[in-house]
Image (tube, rainbow, N blue to C red; front, side, top):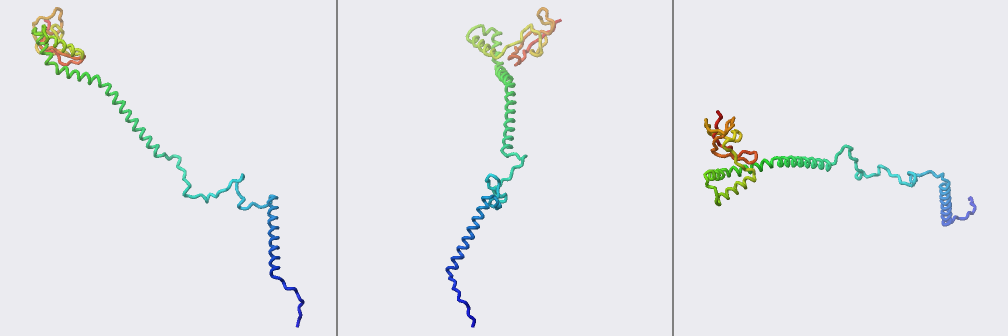
Length: 223
């Protein structure tokens, strides 16, 4: 029977304590070595330390949210508001041109319209003026209140350019006179060399340069 030398039995608690002390000692040496490497500047740059100079943080493009990214507009694209503003400006310019043309047309036609309106009123007064002239020719308006009224009426109409024309001895002018009779051998004024009025059947009237009614006359030619 073999006999083994007596060896002291190992204490489990003591063995565990020795292992902890050894591990702590090894870890401390590793930390110290790492610190020395950093102080010397020889430690390799890890992924966390990589980045742009100046301490700025680098961002990966792949990390940008596609929903947040905005696509740039095309350089030739025109904003809808710009097109709408151009359209409204065109409409405004067209309306302004139409108004200017309308105003010019009104200013040009205003004197003609005014003259036409006066002529219409005076033309309606012709029967009254014929009666006044007939009464004057027969001596019925030599005095009295009716003579004063006739004079005031003729003076009032005269302010609008209303006047009577056509008298015996005037040269016949087809623009202002209407010959209703031709009297050969009638007495003419001395020195008459053309067709001359020898009798006024109905006087003519005009307003300014507008003939309301030509004078209706009888004419005769010099022999």
